[in-house]
Amino acid sequence: MPKHLQKEIENLKKSILNLSAKVESAVHDAAFAIEQRNRELAQKVIDNDIVIDQQEVEVEEECLKTLALHQPVATDLRFIIAVLKINNDLERIGDLAVNIAERAVFLATQPKPDISFDFSDMASVAQSMLRKSIDALVNLSVDLAQDICASDDIIDFMNREMYLKVQKAILAHPEQIASLIHLLSVSRHLERIADHATNIAEDVIYMVEGQIVRHRTEEYK
Image (tube, rainbow, N blue to C red; front, side, top):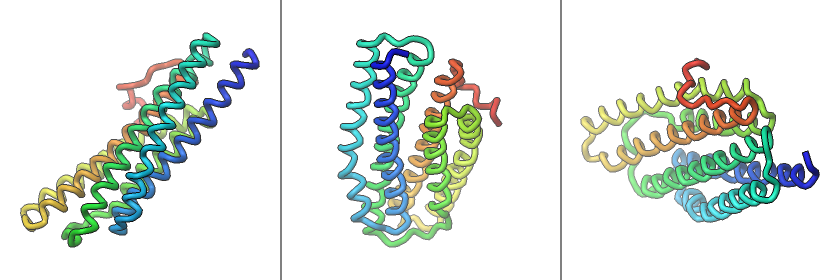
């Protein structure tokens, strides 16, 4: 690999890891704001989204510049393509963290709904999948990426469980419908974060092995 291209690849790695750290922090803070009804923390997540958006644009520009100037091939080309896709997934996760934070802002003004569902468990699974997907990227670990793809069923089950609990709670407490619908939205957003983490894992597999594994996650279950 030419030295200039190697330097650009290393810079891309640092940039995508920096972005992933900011996104992971946003997800953590948004989930914590839901649990604690912390309006100030939720607002911080919303306000900081512009930083994630700006950095996503910068990473994309770095990728396009590297493609244009160095015309990489084989593994290097797959790496840059994967970073472009992962970059987009991270930005979308940041948006989902904002959506959760917006729900937290509303819920902080409302009485706590009468529903037994531990969001901390669901948030923990989503955050773990996101963290592992980045670890898989750093270590170029196909095994870890495959584990993430297989574990997506866990959070899908949690989301379905939440839907059923909200459905029953609405019938029992129709006066709480607004808060309950917001909680259901939080569950759906966490499930989508896990989906994006799975996308990142699939891109890592593509980066390492050159195989597109979308729609084949049943192989890892």
